[in-house]
Image (cartoon, rainbow, N blue to C red; front, side, top):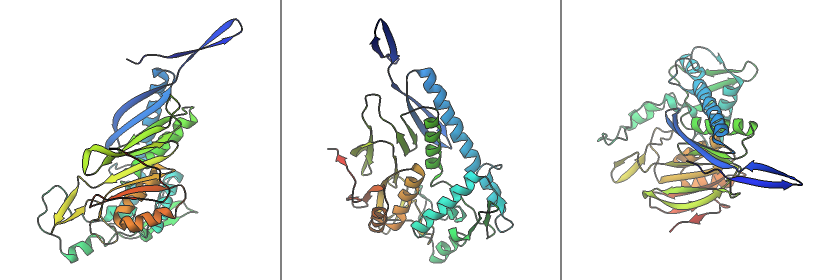
Length: 329
């Protein structure tokens, strides 16, 4: 039970009673993942009403971008690969346009056409043989963001190879978190957190006036944190490979695969990115695994209002130039 707090203001002969702001929280499964939604409001009825609005918004987005939904716009695009362009909503067109911009920014390390990739890697411990070079090369034959053809005037998307597919697994939850935050802001919710399985977007401050505080998991021991940071009006996403990987010849390959080559990434075990949007942070965190920490951090340092923390497979921590971090003991 939440204890209600009240603020009493005296004006002349009258008292005005103002109910204090409190944090209200709800956890649920959306888009096949855990979502934690926190809002700051004056009472539980108002808070629950707005949390349900956020849930409806996230569900709406899933119906647009899900490649598992037979009726989604994304499925229609994939079903018409190599056949014809598909007219889509402005929202989806712009999302794909931004995704391609990130592909160009990362030299193809991020690519929504990764969904075209043959599934030759297994990270459940069942792999005992390293795939051949020919098999790996063939697995990415249909991958390539430059084969996603956008027609701005007609607002159409065309995948120009049969069997080609796009998917939003690397940015979908981040985008949903962004949209839920934007909706709640328009409804007057001045502070909160949308946490989509680690794709987190924050705004405003805690009821006590302090910034939100986030903890970053120690990838060498997932039951501990290695750093805590204050965050407000910003998104943060952590991608990790400390649970999904395969080892060949004493080298650990992660579940994040380079869409350009078909080989799993290696050398990075955790990447945390701070950015204005969870969509962007999500895409860049994935890209750092593929680019490697040196190239990844160098690329982040060239971008305004974006920072990162990267941990390599030796446990060494690397930072972008302007990050402010408080290490835990």
